[in-house]
Length: 383
Image (cartoon, rainbow, N blue to C red; front, side, top):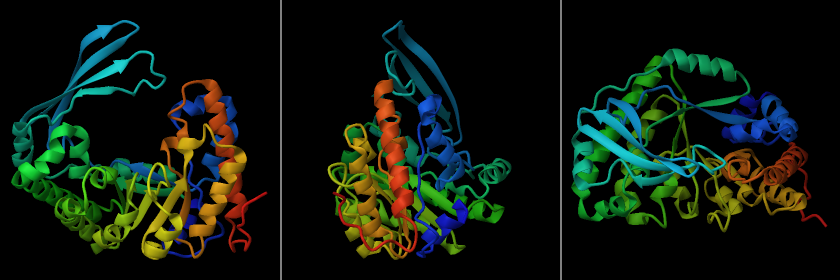
C-alpha cells in the first residue's frame, strides 16, 4: 500500500496495512550525514501530509506589496529589520531583531508586530476585500511531485489565528472584551472572504484537503470556552461548511491544552487534528481522545519529541507502543511527533542533533514494529 492510500484509509477510519508514520526534519538536519537513514525513510516510506500554497493571501487577505529594510546592523551581534506591507488600507509594519549567533538564521524576536494599535485594527477590519488570486498551475505541479508519497493539504488563511500572532498580544486579547464590534466585523468579513475562496478553489479543482494553523492560540490559557464559542466557533464553521459541501476535509495544527475542545472542534467541522501533545506540553490523553472523537477526527501525534534530547531509545519505543495501544485500533490514527520537525529545529550543536537523530530512528523502528495491522495483543510495558 502506498502512502497516499495508507493515509486515506486511516482517515476513513479503517485499518490499512500498517499505521501511517509521519516524520519530517528541518532543512538544517538534512546537511548531516548521520541523517542518511532517516532521509531515506522520509523519501521512500514515511506517510506525510504536505502543505501547499495555492492562493495569494496577501496581508490578511488584502492585496499587498511587501518590502523590508535593515534599520540597524551591529556586526557579530544583531540586526533589526523593518517589514512593511502596503495595502489599500494603508501601510502595516513590524520590526524584528535577529541575533547573529543563532543557529537558525530564521529565528528572530518581535519588537513590534503589524497590528499594534486600535487604529490599525480598525483599518484591518474595514479594509476592502477582493477575490483572492489562485495559482492552479503551481498547485497541479506540486500535486504531481507528491504523487502517491502522501497527501497535499491546501493551506488556508485563518484570520483570527493569524491576527493573534501578528498583533500586539498584550492588546489583541483585551480587544475581545473592549472592542467586540471591531473584532466581529473583522472576523465576519475576513472569514466570508476565505469561504468564497474555498468555493473558488473547489470549482477550479484545487483541494479537496485543506489545513489551517494557530488554534493553540485560541484555547486556554489564551481564551476560554465562552470566548471560543463567540469568536472562533461560528466563523470557523462558516468556512468548514463550505469545505464539506463538496466532500472536502480539514486538518488543523493545534498545540497545547486542546483536550477539552476536541468534541467542540469536531462539531465545528474539524476532520483531523495534530499534534495532540501529552503533559507537560499539553493535556491530551490519547486514549480519551480516541474514545471521544476517534470515529470522526483523524488523530495524529502524541510522541513528545520536545524531550528527544533527554529520552532514551527505550523510552521512545514505549511512547510509540502506548500511542499505538491507545489509538491505532480501527484506523483513524497516524503516528506523529509533537515537536516541530521532530526536535531537529531546536538543537544547539552537532552532539544534540545526533542524539535527536538516534531517537528519531528509535521512533521509526518502533512505528514499523508495533504498527502493523492486525495489531498485536500485547502492548504491556517492556522490561
